[in-house]
Length: 79
Image (cartoon, rainbow, N blue to C red; front, side, top):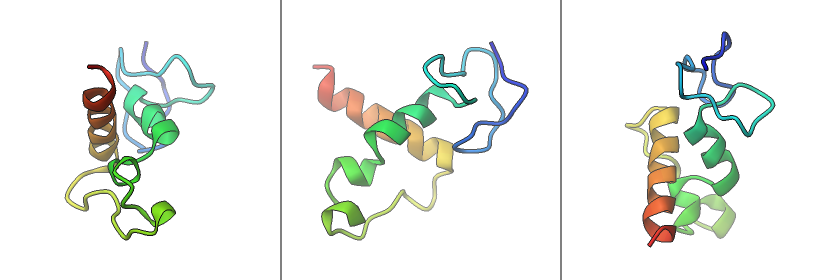
């Protein structure tokens, strides 16, 4: 099911099959996941929360960075 609103995290259109069923607002699955688990930098302990200076890779869109964070988490936790 698609949403008639853009994603509340990245602002991109939500197409059929991309809407997170776990959220009360329109969010892509990966965007909600990133909001809960954190960015790739956060997961690596290199963001400002951990005293580091890394942020999301600047060459990625917000949604691409969310996908990266979700993919990294899956690689580390679904073994």
